Image (cartoon, rainbow, N blue to C red; front, side):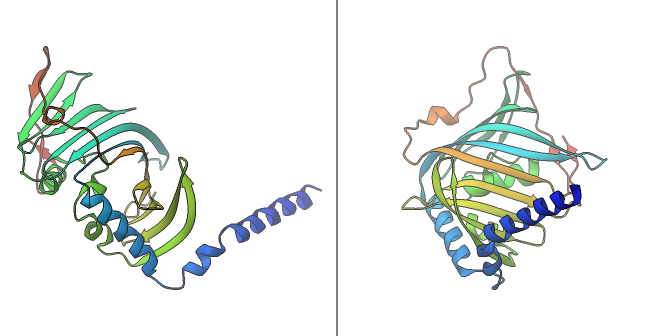
Length: 257
C-alpha cells in the first residue's frame, strides 16, 4: 500500500513537472534565444537611460559553511541614483546596517550602530566609482550590477546560453522571466511588461563554488522621477561618530591599509 501510494505521488509530481515546463524545454533548442537578449537589452537601455531613480530591494544571500550547509541572510535596501555622479544606498539586515554615500567626489560608508564611518576620494562618474569600490575596496553597492550605464555589456559578457522562461507575476507586476548562463555564473531577471521595463527580481547563482550559492533580489517601489537634492548624497558626520580608514584590497585580494 505504501509503495502504491508513493508511486501515485511520484506520478503526480512528474505530471505537474511535464505540465509546468514545456515552454522551458522547447526554448532550449537555440543556445542563445535572441528574444531573451532583446528583453535584457531593452531593460538595461531603459534603466541606463534614466537620469535618476529610487528603488527598494530585499536581498537574500547564501553563505556556505565548511560543512557544506547553506545559511541565508536578508537585507533591506533603499537605493537612490542621480546620474552621472550621485548614489546613496542604505542597508538594514541580519549582518549589516550601513549607508553608502557617493557625491561625485568622495565615497563614504557609515555604520550607525557602531558609530564608525570611512571616507575616501572617488572617481567622478558613477560607473568608475562602482568599479573602484569593487576592485579596490571590496565593496559592492546595493544592486550595483544593474546601476552601471553599460550593464548590458557587463551582464552578457561570456553568456553562452539564454532563454525566455515565460511570464510571471512578481509583487503584483506582470513580468517576462529570462535566464542566462555564463561559465562562472547563471543569472535570471524578471522584467516588467509595458513601457517601463524595469527589473523586479534578479537571481545570481555562483558556479565556481561547488555548493553554488545564490543571491536573490526583489525590487519594489520603483520611482523614475524622485525629488532629489544634493544633500541626500552628502555625508555629514553626526556627533559622537569616529572616522576610520578603508581597508584596501591587494593584488591577491587580501586587505591592507
